[in-house]
Image 1 (cartoon, protein in one colour):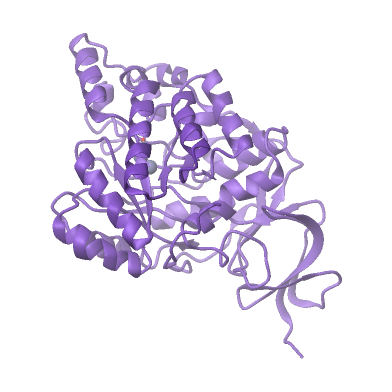
Image 2 (spheres, rainbow, N blue to C red):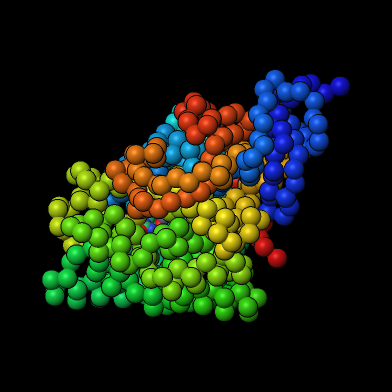
Length: 469
Ligand code: URP
Ligand code: ZN
Ligand code: ZN
C-alpha cells in the first residue's frame, strides 16, 4: 500500500491549460501523486473550497541581480525577487545570466550561480544573454552550455553594451538551429533610436516622456520584421520578447500565417500602462521607462486581442528592478538627467498573475485555460521544463496556487515584497490575489503571508524546447 500523502488539497476547482475539474490533490515527496475524489487522509490538509486552484506561474522573463554597465544596481536579488514572485503566485522564475562584452559565457553562468546560491525561495532556471558571440563562444561555449541545460538565450538588437549586428545575429541563430535552442530576441532598431535620441536631446527634449518618442512603433516593427526574416533565412524558431503594440503584432501574425515558427511574449506594461504614464508629474515618469515603451489604449487592445487569438505564447513580467530614489536606480545619472540615461525597466514579478487573472479572465477578455497557458504551461514547454513544471498533472512538481478571487484589493507598493520603492501599478484594483502558494509540495505563502525558507529553491536544468505545432 502506498504511504500517506504529505498534503491533500480538498474540494479544489482546478484549471489547467486544457481542462477544468473539481477534485482532491494528493501530494507526496514534492510531486502531485493523485488527482481524484475522496482521497485518503494526508499528514496535512487544506480545504480549497471557494478558491481557484491553478498551476504555479512561470515568469520566463525577469531580471534579478543582473550586473549593469551604467553604474546602476538592480534592487532585487534572488532572495527578494523570488520572495516577491512567490507572493504573486509564481513558482518558477527564469532570469538571465548575462555575458558582458569581453567576458566568457561560462564565466557569466558561474557568476550568476553564485548570485543565486542559497537565496531562492522558489525554483529557477537561467536564460543566457549572448552579447559577445566570438568564435569560441559560438563554436564551443554556447553549444556546451545548451547541452548542460541552458537551452535558451536572449540576443539584443539595441543597447550599446549588449547589441549584436546583423551578421552576428545570423551566426548566433545558426547555433540555435544546430543545437535545438530557443533564441529570444529584443527587437528594436538601434540606429533609428540613436538618431531620434540625438535629435530630441539637441532640442532639449530630455524629459522621461521623450523615451517613447525616441522609440516609436516603427522602430519595433522594423526590427521585428528583420528578426523574422533572419529566422526564416536560418530556418530556426525564435521568440520575440516584450512585444508592445500593433505594428510588431502585425509582423508576427504575418509570419505565423506563412507557417514560420515565430513565438511571441508580451508583458503587463503593454496592457495596463501607456505613454502617458511617462509624463507623470516631476520626474516620476521615469518609473515607467522600459523598452519598448508602453503605447496607448488602442495598442493595449491589440495586445489583448493577440492574447485571445493565439498570437502570443507567453505573458512575462520583464521585471527589471531599479529604485526611483537613491543613487543606483532610475537617477543613476543624476536628478533630471535625460531619458536616455535612465535605466530601462519596471518591476512586476508580484503583480503579473493577479493583473492578468483579474483583468483578463474575471473580466472575460481571455479564458481561464488561456491564462494558464500564457502564464505557465507554454513557458514550461518552450523553455524545456515541461511536464515537470507548468501544469497540474500526476507526476508533475506540486507547484500550485490557491487563488482568492472574491476580494477586491487595490495594488499598492506597501503590500509587495520586492525591494523596489514603487510599483507602476499603484492604485489599480484587482479581484484576484494568491492565498496559498505551494512550491514542490512546500507551502511558501499561507493566507497571503510568506512562510518559506530562502534557499530552498532549486536550479532547474532545461531540456530542449517543445515547439507549438
Ligand atoms: O526596459 C526593459 N525591458 N528592461 C529590461 C531589459 C530588457 O530589455 O528586457
Ligand atoms: Zn529586452
Ligand atoms: Zn527584459
